[in-house]
Amino acid sequence: MLRLPVLRLPFPPFHGEVTESFWASLRYFNFYRMAVATLFLLAVVIFRDALNLGSHDLTLFENASAAYLALSVAFHATLRRWHTQFNVQLTAHVIADVVVITLCMYASGGIRSGLGVMLLVSLAGAALVSRGTLMLFYAALASIAVLLEQVYWVLVLDDGTASFLQPGLLSIGYFATALITNRLAQRLIMNERVARQRGEDLANQLRINQLVIQDVQDGVLVVDSNGLVRQQNRQVTVLLGRPAPELDQIEQYSGELAGQLNAWRGGNGPSSTTLRLSDKLVRARFVAAGVAGGSFTLVFLEDLSKLQEQAQQLKLAALGRLTANIAHEIRNPLSAITHAGDLLVEENRAAGRERLVRIIRDNAARLDRMVQDVLELSRRDRVQPEPIRLRSFLSGFIDDFAQNEDIATETFVLDVPEDVQVEFDRVHLNQVLWNLVRNAWRHCRRQAGSVRLRVEGRPGRVELHIADDGAGVPRELQAQLFEPFFTTFSGGTGLGLYIARELCAANGASLEYLDRGTEADFRILWRAAQ
Image (tube, rainbow, N blue to C red; front, side, top):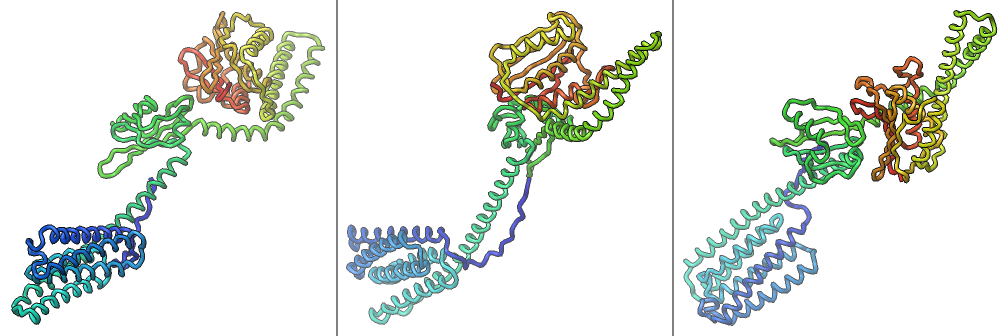
C-alpha cells in the first residue's frame, strides 16, 4: 500500500483567514442574544417589576430590551447576507451587548441586580472567535461600562464607595474569562486544522491506493480475518470470467483459493500457489496487511496465461526469423536425398538397398512435413475469418479425415448442436482439427466411439472438445505439450500442437489441454461467439 509523507505544517498562532465555522459561531452567538432580549421583554411585559427587572426604571428596561431584540434581528439579517468585515460585525455585537446589559443593569438597581454577570457569556462567546488583542479590548470595554455605571450611582445617586468592590471583581472576571476562553479556542481551532489536514491526507492516500489497486495488472483482493472480501479491482472480474461478488465471502470467488488462504493463515500452506480460476491458470500470492492487530490479507492474482502467451510470442518471433533459412537449408538436401533414392530404385534391387531406399524416403517425407509445418507459421497472420456452422463443417471434416487416413467412421462420435456458429478461418480450422484428431487417433484404443468431438454452447462462449479414450497425457508432460519440437512420437515433428495453438490464437480462440485423468481432452474455446 502506498503511504503519503506526513506533512508537518507550521500552523500560525490563529491569525489566518476567517473560516465558515467562525461565521457559524457568530450566528449561534446572535441567537443567544435574541433569546435573552426576548426573555427580558416578555418578563417586563408580563410581570412588570415583580421580578426586580426594571425596578429602578421600568420604562428604560423595557425600551432597552426592545432595542436589544431589534438589534439582534438586524444582526441576523446582516449575517445572512454579508460574510465580510468579520471583526467589524463582531465588535458591533459586543458593543451592543455591553451597552444594553449596562442600561438594563442600571434600570434594575445597579450592580446588585446581578445582570453584570451576563456580560461574562458575551465576552466568552466573543473570545472564542476573536483574534489577536480584540478580546482584551472587549473585556476592557465591559469593565469600563460596569465601573462607569457604578460611578454614576456613587456620584449622582449617593451610593456608598464600598460598592466598587463588586464591579472591580467583576472586571477581573471579564479579563480572566476573555483570556482563558481565547487560549482554549486557539488550541481547539489549531487541533481542528490539524485534524482537517490529516483527514485530507488520509483521503488522498485512500484515493491513490484505490486508483493503484484498480489500475494494477494483477487481480487484487483485500480479505479480512473472517474471509470477507472488503475490496477488489476490475482484473478479478476478468480472471473469474464472470461478475465478481460484492462484499461476499472469498468462497464465493473460488473454493480452492479460500482453502489455500486458510492453509497459509494457519501456517500449513505456502505464500504463493498456482490454481485455476474459470479457464485461466492463475498464481495466487498472499501478503499480510493491516496494523494495530488487524489481520487483513492482500491476495494478488497473476494471470499466468498472459505470461505463457508472451513467452510463446517471443518463441514465435525467433522461429519466424529462422523460417526462411530452415526452408532453404532443408529443401536443398531434401531434393538431393529424393533424387538419390530414385537412382537407387533404378539399379539392381537387393534387400539392403531397398531398406536404404525406404529409410531415405521416410526421412525425406519427414523433412518435407517439417518444412510444411514451419512454413505454416509464416502464414498464421493471413487470417480470413468467416462464419462457420460447426455441425456441418465437422461432419464433412470427419468424412474427409476417415477417408484420407483409411479409418472407419464409426471410430468418431459427433455431438454438436445444429445452430452453433463461430468465426474462424476455414483453412486454419481444418488444419487445427486435422492435427488434433490425428493426435487423438494415434493415442486412442481404435475402437468404435474412441474419438469424440463435442460442442458445448454457453452464454458468451463456445467450447469444442476433441477427446479420446486413451491413457491421457502424464501430468509431468502437460506443461510441454504446446512447446515447439516437443513430441513423444518417433515419427512426429513436434510442431503440430504448437501450430494448432498459434492458429487458434490468430483467429481469436484458445486451445488448451484439460486434465481429465483417464483420457485426453483438448478444448478450443471461442469467447463472445454467436
